[in-house]
Length: 115
Image (tube, rainbow, N blue to C red; front, side):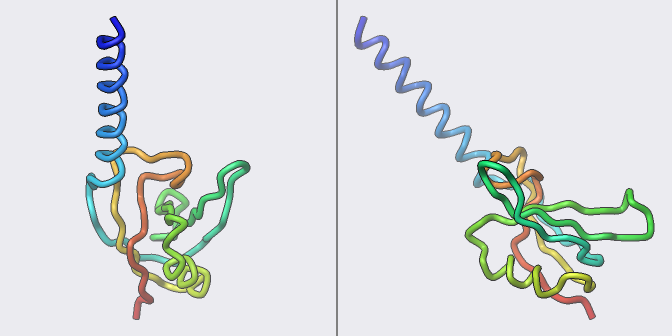
């Protein structure tokens, strides 16, 4: 009986680890978006995350919202410096996100000013 319970608990833990690893490390898509950097903010109550958005046109429907992982200090600083300017963002889209990483499924991997 104890052995069966141990096997079930071990299986649940391994499935959980596999699920979280898949969500975190396997990208759904990768791409590039460009537009005017409208916002970058550090928000949240219990867990603060970096969130931002760029405007890709004149309509409100053409906004791209994204998240930046806390460990990406250089990217966060570049986004702060480029506020209000035309930027090009390289991103990775995940299948899902975790609340401690960000609000969106899009995570920025590189930032550059557009000429």
